[in-house]
Image 1 (cartoon, protein in one colour):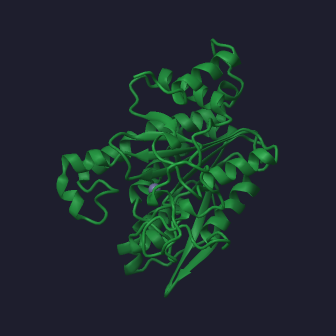
Image 2: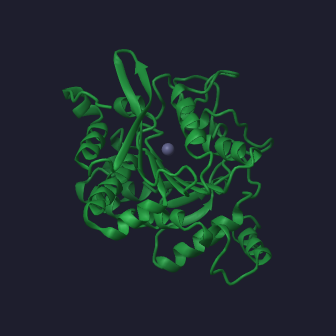
Length: 353
Ligand SMILES: [Zn+2]
C-alpha cells in the first residue's frame, strides 16, 4: 500500500504519511500492512490501514491498538505513532523486544476514520459518529444524553445513522478485520485511544451501553492490580465506561458481546480516554481553537503526552503476551470469589455517603 504524498495530505493528514514512512523505514518484513477499505468522500479517497507486527501464529495472544475513530482526536493517533516508532527502533537491536514480539501478535489500526481526520471533524464523511454506529441499544431506562448517540440529524455531532441502516463502511471493515484476525487468538487486549473527556486520563472497560457489571471483571481487576504494582505512580483512573456516561452504538460493546456469544476466548476491550480538560485549564486559549478541546496545542505539552503513555502501551503489550497472569490469576493472592467481590465493591457498589 502506498498513498501518494500530496500537499493537501501533508497539510490535512500528515499522520498517514508518517505511518507510511515509518513502515518503509522499519526492518525488512517487520511490519505487515493491509488496506482494509478505501473510504471515499467527494474527491477524497483514503485508505483504512491495518498494521501487524510480531507473531504470525493465529493462536498467539494478541494486542490490538486503535485510534482516530473520532477524526478530531488526532492526539490518539499520534500517541500510537510514537509507540510504533519506539517499538520498530527497538526491534532493530534489542533482543528482548524481538523475543516479546515472537510471543504476541501486535495489530494496529492507527486511523479508523481517515476522512474525519482529514476534514478535522469527529464524524466520518457521512456525518456519522463511528462509536455510536453499531447495532447496540443502551440499556432501557439508562440516561443517555444527546452525546450518547441520537438519530436527529447528521449535522449534529454524535449522530448514529438512520434506523436499520448498515454500519458505515469503516465500521464494517473494522468488525470484519477484528473477527477474522482474532478468531483463534488465545486472548486479546485491545486499547482504543480517544481524547476530550474529563480532567484525568481514564482507562475504560465495558460496558458503554449499560451499568451492569462487565463479565470479565476478574480479568480487568487482575490487570489493574498488575498495573498498580508495576507502576505504583501511574496516572490512570480505571473504571467502567458507564461510570462516566452511557451510549448507544458502541462498537466495542458490539464486538465483545458477539465474541462472547460465539464462545471466543477472553477479550478485554479497553479505551484510553485522554483527559483534555487539564490542557484547557492550563491554556484557556485552546477553547477557541477547533482542535483545542481534543488535542494539546503547545509543543511541550504534546511532547509530554506522547512520552507519558509509552509506559502504558509497553505494559499492555507485555501483559497481552503473558495472559496467564490476568486470565488465570497466576500470582494473585486471592481466590476467584474474593477477586470478584473486590472488583464489584470497587466499581459497581454504591459507596456510602
Ligand atoms: Zn473519541
